[in-house]
Image (tube, rainbow, N blue to C red):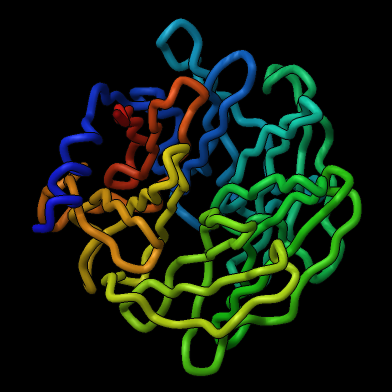
Length: 323
């Protein structure tokens, strides 16, 4: 291990772990998301009988005085008195305007879902009625968007209708109107669920999940409007979701399953350039168990917060210090 990797491993340490809502209000849960608001950390996930069951809704909790509030269901796929679809993949983002947005998907499966959003002006205490996104737009498909200096909210999106294809969407007015790129993958590399990393001189990198057993990488030099060629990184991926964040010191942090099969272990890696990654620690190592679909953010106090699916039964919250 190189000197930089040794120093990096020492600089990121676990300082707390707990479950968000234990016991959970539903038999199964998955796909958690985190955001920081002026009133503290908030989390959401989908939960119900099992993934894809019509009773699956979006559940929400707030961290108050170091304790997570009892989860409440804030969105469902109820269409009529007799029709209800499952919900999928919530994504929270707190905008500079002060509005908290919760994006999620509704539909029978990932090939036939659509995007919806609800809004809160009080950090998640109350929520608006659902708004359906325009046809052809899903919003952030799994991982957090980034709010750019020009006011655009850049969202990593993808679809699984036929060949997996990743693209990027953006909105300038709080998810009321939208624009997007064309597909950025789908031939040699089948990619979905991008996470964004920030580089010097305004360059943006997206990395994420593929069917090719490795993470993908792709760069934009014009703030996400156009993108270069996609490549596979030398980072294994078992066709499972990841998340990543650029830390304030310029390093990039990745939470992922560092294997080509299965969803254990769940680990943390660091990189200086977003291309070469060094695993520095494991969050979970139990064999033949599922630890998956992480979300990661760095809070205002510098602490790193990670949430993830724990055996489809609970959502784990881990706090890391970053010196």
